[in-house]
Length: 292
Image (cartoon, rainbow, N blue to C red; front, side, top):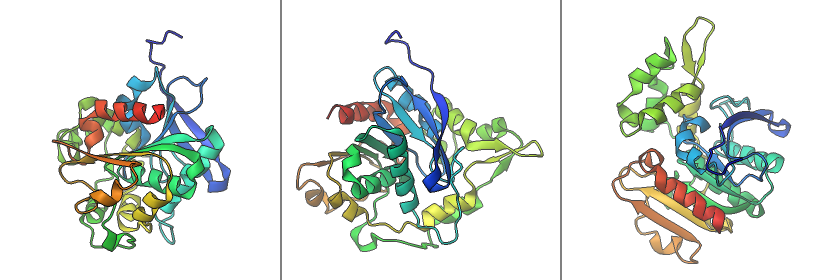
């Protein structure tokens, strides 16, 4: 294959019988090489949302952009009652690596996907060669283990989210230039909508990530990110938003940089949707992590 021609991304379903279903993935890059990067999305989104951000790397890397449990086309059970919180995502991710990758791999992710990647690296350090975390959700020390946070405005907003539209084009027009999507390109929004909605029996479309599941992710975390930083062993590159970051680091810089393994960079002018605003920086970071 001509190295200048980008291979067309392929949608896949990867069976994970020990986890109770299959995980959907957008495979980017040549399928005849080992997986370089496993990428995990933010809460409420899906792997295809990041297609235009990741596809330019397809001549150099093989990437699996996953649909996490309860998102996109993934069929893993999404039962809210009694769930483990984000440890579910950690364990799904480790099962995916065991089933599909020649470990160790680079784990990367945005927001909840970044945190899930960190938890996986902490649980099984030998499986992960480097981490690229894009504005991960990291709580301050005093609230590092949070469960059932019913007062969260993000949780309330998710429960109010409109789930059904007449068509995908109607959803696209409703979102375009508004709310969380204000800084997104038209292509990025189209990628999200294409995999973020499925047809219903009555001809409408509905969210593939149910509002109740999205709200559950905002309300039940049940993990200690600081212990995960210490338990991980690989190099970690964090890209942090300047405005509205979910990774408050004031007073923690010395602890994070103590052993030289963790680098945190705050990117000027960015919001929590940093990947959409600075896609070229995300690509540079992934290439650097693979080269380590």
